[in-house]
Image (cartoon, rainbow, N blue to C red; front, side, top):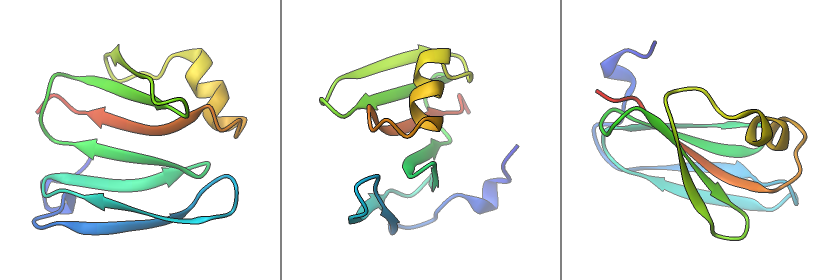
Length: 93
């Protein structure tokens, strides 16, 4: 899906605008790749067991096994509800 050369070799910022229209900055680590989806930051990680870590606005964190986002979280992201604050995708590499 993603070529190894696309992952960061050194730390870098990911600037984005959140759902309230505020400018934000997420510091990315080496070995990651970041982008936004419907103003939600998504960070790909080359390591870790395959899964998606969903961080909620309330600070809750849950791990969805596999590389498919559950329907409820997907609807929250695409609906721009603000319930999902961040997605970390662990590619299992």
